[in-house]
Each structure stands twice: as C-alpha cells, then as structure tokens.
Length: 587
Image (cartoon, rainbow, N blue to C red):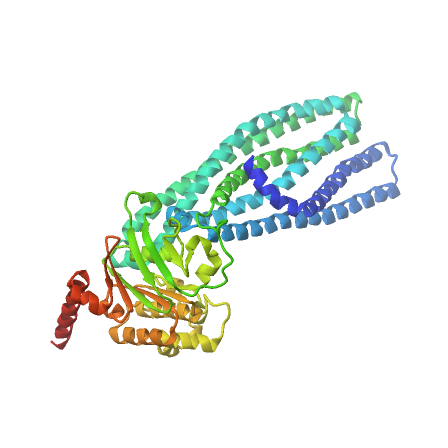
C-alpha cells in the first residue's frame, strides 16, 4: 500500500523510540498478567489456611513492586510512542507546508484554502492517532491476548478457556465489516469538514462584502446547510461506533456468563481451585481490553489510512515549475529582457491565448510601461516574467538566457514584484516591509518607506512601524496597503522591479512623488510598470499597449500620441475625466 510505504520513511527515522516504547508496553503486560496469579495464591492460601501473614505480606509486596514497575513502564511507552507520534505529526506538517510552497500556481487555482486547512488539522490529527494509539492498542492487545490466553490455558483450565473464548471469536468477524464501514464514512466526514472549513474561511475573508450587500441571512443559510451535512457525516461515524461497541460488550458479557456457569461447575467438581476460578475471572476481565482495543484499533486504522491517503495526494502532486537539466550556473541578473514572439494560454484554456506574438526588447536600466484594457494580459505578462507559469523555450530571455536556464531562486530573488492585490501579512508594518529582505535594517526600512511615500503615515500611527496591520492589511486604506507593498519591493532593491497596477489607489501628487523617487533610486536598474492611468507611465522609456493579448502599439509617449491610436484615445478619455472631476469639485 503506497500510504504505508510513504509513512514508513517517517517511522524508520524514529524506529528506536518506537522499539523502546514497545518494550515498555510489553513490560507492562508481562507484569500485569502475573497479578491475578498472585491474588489467586492468596485466595487459595486463605481457603486452605496454608498461608501465613508473612506470606500475605510477601505476595502483597510483589504486587506493589509489579504495580510500581507497571507505572514506570506505562510512562515509558506513553512518552516514547505518543511523543514520537507527535514528532512525526510535526514533521509531516512541516514537510507538507514546504511541499505546498513548491507547488505551482495551477494547484492553488484548483484547490480551495479550506480544504488545504482541513489537511493540516483533522487529517494530520487522524494520522497522529494512527501512529500513536493504534500502535499501542495493536501491540498491547496482541501481547495481552497471547499472554492472558496462555495463563488461562496452563494455569487454570484449557476446556474453560475454550468455552470462554468461543464467543469472542465473533468479534474478529465483525471487525472486518466494521473497518470497511468506518473507512468509507470517515472519508465522507473529512470531505464534509473540508467544505465547512472552506465556507467559514471565505465568509470571514469576505465579511465586508457580505455586510455591504446585506447578505448575512443568505450566508447563514448556506453555512447552516454545509454545517448540517458535516453533522450528518459525523453522525454516520458515531452511529457505526454506537452500534459496534454495545455488540462488543454483549459478546464479552456472554463470555463472562459462560465463564461463571462452567467455571463454577468446574470449581464445585474440584477440577479447579477457588483461587484459580478467581484468577480466571480476572483474566476474563483482562481480555475485555484486547477486545475493546480491537474495535478502537480498527477505528484508528480506518481513519488514519483515510486521512493518510488524503495527505499522500498532496505529496504526489508535483510542481510544474522546477529547475531542469538546462539550468545554468547564473549567480545574478542584470535586467535586460527580451520577449521573442511571446504566446501564452492558461492550461485550462489552451485554445484561447492570453498573450500572442509579443516582441519587445527592454534594455538594462530602462523603464517599460505596459498599458491596456482589463483582460488584455498585463498581469499575465508579470506572472510569466516571474515564471509562475511556464512558456515555450526562448520566448522570454533575460540577459540573453532563457528563463528555464536561470535558477528559480536567482530569478525570483532578482525580481521585486508588487502584485495587484498588495497582500500584507497579519504582522507589524516593519515586518511586512522587511519581508522580502534577508536582513532587517531599521534605517533601510524607513528609507524604503520614504521612497514609497508611506513613512509619514506610519509615523502618525500610535505604534509607528510596530503597528499590526490585521489580516491581509485590513486596518490600512487601499493606498496605504499599496505603498507598503511598494516599500517592501524597494527594500529588496532587485535589478528588476515589476509594479502591477500598484499606484491605482494613490492620488496623483503622491503618485508623481513615488515615480520621481523610482527614477532617482533605480538608476541602472530595470523597471516594468503596469498601469491603467497614462499619468503613471507617460515618462517611461518605452510604452507597450496591449489589446486582446497582442502588441497594439509600442513607443514613447510622444510617439504614441502622434499615432492617433488606442493610446491617444485612452489619454484623451482620461484627460476629459480629469477635467470633469475638477469642474465637479469646484462646483
């Protein structure tokens, strides 16, 4: 089974701890199985008046010593087995998070956040139970069963043992069907939990939209439906256990009844002593745990394997973007970019190219502006330069090298990127700005913030750079989030900077100051500015106008204005809007 092959690598790394835990577990069982024999001796001695008070004290001390040894050994197996299961859970969680970081954007486009969260919580918890309590119940139940049956046969009576054990064999038959039912129902339960987690995550993330559109009741109804489904699937697991456990108790009760009747008869007939009869009943009580453990073990195994299968699916997913055999030993980028007939379509829409036939040369240290209507492929171009998606070989070259020849670590280290969504982490402003840098120099952070025109705003906050911005930067305005993201990119000080519509939420005066700071501080470094406003890009060295993924126009601001094409049309519309807004403001 591939799931067991996968998890065995983790178990092998901790095999010594597991062995120590199992040894301690066996020690508990060995000591535990001798206690009924000692109590049986005391009972027989009292009945036949052949035991003295010293003898009782002697046997009592042995029972006390065995109890002490059991307590120490019980701590040992809990520490080694349960502790190891926790360690493996931590390693799995870290490895899974690291693996997710390597996966390509396609994977995250196809999978919901809530489902991934369920893998990190419920699924890994079930795997931990499989690696901890399952090991304990399986070994403990097996060892205890063998030792107790051995003592029952050789110390008490073989015929009585057979009569008592026959009903217990029915449990093995029921275990098979119970395991299959539990496995199926637990998979359904985990899927329902994933849906529930995803619903909560989306609702919380979009709470402002929900409130703005007064959709609280609708969302509550949707949540109630998913919550009911989650409850139903959980109840399916509960019902299976609720049915199996009483049947288990019934079978154990029948075994106890047969023991009482036939064992009493044998004691009266003189085939066994009263002490042996007392010991045998204690042994039957000891058999209850292995039988109950069998049901628990089946539950843990079914749930653990179901969750492990879901975890393995993530690890089986391979990233589309990796360093291939053609990668070269390139230590740094300069910033010269060539687009050689760049054509690209997303994997799920291969017959609809987003970009088609782009041919552009960007010299090192120059500024390229990209303009176009919504959906013209501007952000896709940025994603391709970062190699978040693959293109055909040689369609994009940096410093004369194809993207696939440049190590991914070097490519993304030497490109600073400000995406459209301006994502900020739920952390301090200082940590958000310093996120992309490998060092945290407060002076450099402040300088980057000044160049992004956010420093003065930060200093107005009561806690300054230590201000917590909330989830996704929710406590900041749109313009403040944009400028914080720009500061983060400027601090990185990479040879290539890409601004993807990153000045749309700032006023024109602030925009002009930021652009001025960029020109002064990025001399000799390449900058790509994607924007909708011509005021943002008119001073760029070259302007690329995209229209439905094609290069409609290319040149400087003056050249494009002279062409009387799309660029000029957009410019005149924006100028008219600006004029109308100014007149409206004066009124």
